[in-house]
Image 1: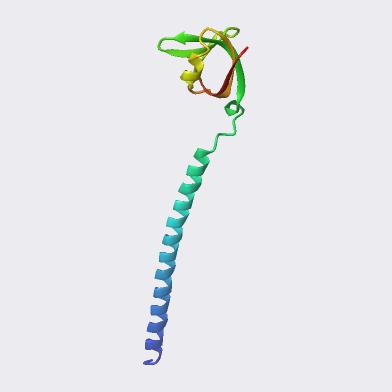
Image 2: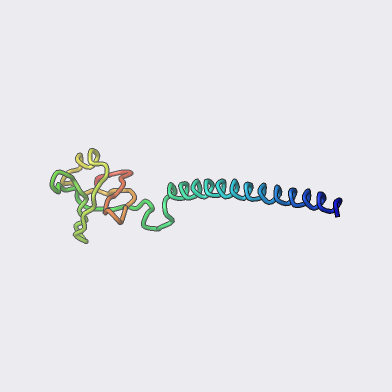
Amino acid sequence: MKIFLPHMAKVLLALTAAMFSTVGLTRAQSASDRQQGTRIAQSQQALPPDDPDMHEKTFTGVVVKSGDRVVLLDTLSKTSYQLDDQQKAKSFLNKNVRVTGVLNPATGTIHVSAIDPV
């Protein structure tokens, strides 16, 4: 029995050490996985949504003053759109234009790529 007991203690010690090293490895992997998941989520937020409304379109109307800002007024639908490039838009005040840009439907603002007279 004397020989068996020390051998059993060594086996138990080895199993305990293996168990703790596995737990540490799992924790390290979990932290790494969380960091990678955060990086993936951040990169996905940076990408534009795959929404047809978020692609560049052409809008036509008249650039008019609305308070201290100028907006594009679609005279057919009576819809007005905020324009993010106020400097460019001001040079077309009271003129018929074609605005090319991406509409943010949540804010009603067009991110202007180009404004051309019609």
